[in-house]
Structures are given as structure tokens and as C-alpha cells.
Length: 291
Image: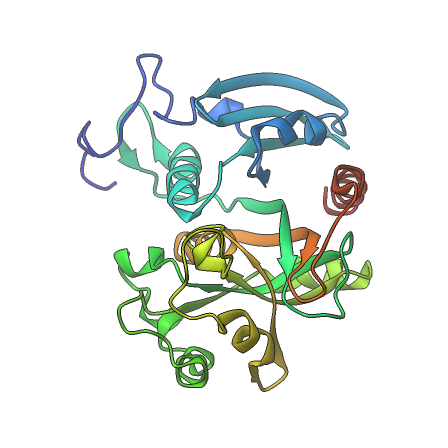
């Protein structure tokens, strides 16, 4: 067993649950659906056969129940890889740290994370209301650089070629590339979903090239992302979570896949007229096929 984890490092609530997520081991399924919006949690758990547990703290809402005889969880992360760092770290702690003794367990449990989110297309031929599974997350957020053994994510030849092709600003974090679970990705492709590399930004406006009152440093970034190719890989869409999910999952030994409903196309200027219905269709399909 490892050394005792200090209370300042493994922060717990008075009932012994992890601090932000309010979860104990009995509250967590091995398959976990990640959504950004707390309001989307009941939309997902509505497809469960039953819901046995609910909790909420700040924007983190969790429902756990059963589907097809299996224990499953849906949890809201909020937006951005900073929240992903909190939620995935605490979910891993619930599964792989003894919360009573505060020691890392000798036998590790592998969790399966499936993000059900929304995203903007960076390719003209990927229309709104379509579904896209991320083969990789291309992170502009810098999250994995804070963790040991993450060098391979940023030393990837895709990253080297990308930095050169787009003339990446050296003041920004070095991009990194993390891969999703190949088995789940194949299942999504077999369902007819688009697939490609998902760029993960640190914000919704300037970091994704949107201009309101403030200008952006690189007005052609989206065009560069759309044009970039490395072997058979291309950047298909923009969002704010996938690289963190894939990077942390790889480092922790978990499986992960992001599946997004495309709600906007950045080149045709279209936005979905009713993406809520498209999301419900996506949620139903994924839960039926992946649980």
C-alpha cells in the first residue's frame, strides 16, 4: 500500500465523500456518462431503467442507476478542462483510493467515460445535427503538462507538424494529442457517426476565433485548423473538454470516448434550429449501444 494521503491532498466531506462530487464508492457505476450541462443529467438518466442515487454540489450533478442490469452513472462536469481535472480526478479517487484509510488501492479499477456533448464543426461537409466521435483530442489547454509521464502527448509527430503548419504562437501552451478508446470509437463509426480529431480550446469566444468586441491574435486560426492534415488525420471540430478527458484517462488507465452532437458549422455559419432533439436522439442511441 502507498503512503497515507494528507487531508489537504485528498479532500473529503464530513460524510467521507470526495469533496466536489459528493460521491462514495457505492454511488458510482463503472460506466460513466459525462455531460457539461447540469440540466442534461436528467435527460441522460431518463434512459436508465431506474435511478437509485442523486446528488449535487455547485454545477456537478450526479445520477446513478441501472441500465440492462449494469450500474451506470451520469455526471455533469461544467465547461472546460479545468473542471474535467476536478471531476475525473475525484472519480478516479472514488474507484482507486480507499477513502477511509486514504491509501491508494493495490488493485486498480478501470472506468469507462463517455462524454455526450455539443460541438462546432470545422469542416464544411460535417453538417449541424450530425454526430461525431473523437478519435483524438488536440489540446490547446495545457492541462496534461502539469502531470508526470505526459511527454508523449506533446512529442507526437502530429503535434510537431501542426505547430509548424499553423505557426503556433509560442506564448500559448504547447498543444498535445491524446487518443480515445479504439474499441468504442469503432463502435461509434459502425453506427454511422463521423470521426476525427477534436480541437479542445480554453474558452468559447476568443480561443475559438469568435470576435465580439475584442479582436483575436490569429484571425485565420479556424481556417488553418480546417486545412491541416497529417497522414489521414484531420481536425473536424472545436469544443472545450475532450483533450483533458482523453489525456487524464490515458494517464490513469481508464477508457474514454467523446461523442458530440454538431450544433454549429463555423464555415457555413449555420446553427442547429433544435439541437435538444438531436441530443436526445444521440443520448438514446449511445446508451442503448454502449451499455
